Image (cartoon, rainbow, N blue to C red; front, top):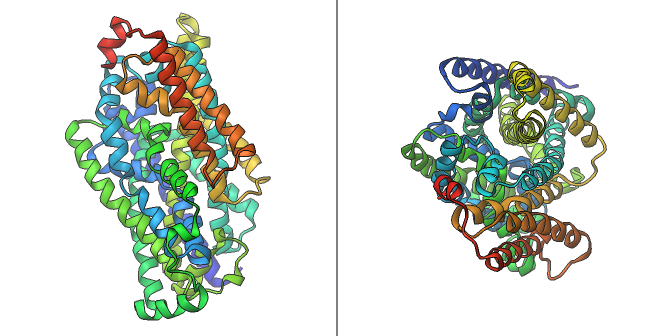
Length: 494
């Protein structure tokens, strides 16, 4: 290991340790101040999120290794400005998620005591089968998405520090698992806020040093003409129309169905905070996503593409080439922040699904003895589930061969198909029934998986067919049954 790699590794380890310590300490302090149950403190942070933290945790949860590594890498190696244009569709995502889901989810959560998306679904539809099915689907697709994130985090550490992939993976996994286990939602939200700031700093550093290394915009333009001659081809020339539409649905409109972002709507403290978060989130998201992809595209002017095997290694290679070693270590913290903030939210969701939505609801139930043990050992049980889930993901990550970008998008699509119509339809359509919700969730996932492997038409991603099928099932079943929800559902959910 070279001196430069030792310096970068030291900065990386310091950043990881700082996040773990900050998350655990702040989580404990906040927990002591709250009078809510241990369960609500751990899973939704006592509903105390302010506007800035809400914005940052939503952004940090939504952005991932694809936003900082694979996407910008693809722009610099292959797709040029077309990749920047399609990335721009993600700019209004925070505004969309919080604007559509925010107030309604928060109101229902407070009325019913729901601390998870599955908890909302149970209050809205009163279907145990729906809760069990969606919780199991959530865990399955969360594991798939975490594999891509763990692989991305380990790849970053490996490519810049020289540590073998296996040990880089263990270092990354232990850090996130530890602060998520012992700090809960509050730790996740705080570290997400820190990581949102770090991501902005990292984006600025990459843009600045790429411009400097490329000799300004004129120098970059000349370099791109040489290294990436079709850089100015529009996105319609680089992508089939079906692929573009699919991408816009998958990372734009469809994100309303992602449980890891929807659950943020259960944790803020006031409508004022929600509105503030929508503005801050949109501005920050614009800077990070457009800035990173633009810098990635420009880096194509100064980098030798033959030096890296895939787009996953392009940005780390560029950073080592153009940044002073200390700043390279700081930049590494930005994509690491994106990865960690996605993983911690997914780990917490898995714990909620397994412990609260499945174990407590269907095994503990109202048994006084079991409930007493559940409450007594709640924190220990949550930590154990997070650790076991992390270990399972590490095992599969060591055997994952698919490129990070596509593995992440597959999991994205699966989660959206599982939850989109039961969640969004349930919030805004009174005639949505439990049969409609269950049929749309299972039907959408079945169509999604089938089309992913067997239907390839005009570049259209399987998520389009899955969401289309789910919508048809949801509204057809609701119209055929043609019944309004009972009085309790009307009072709590509308």
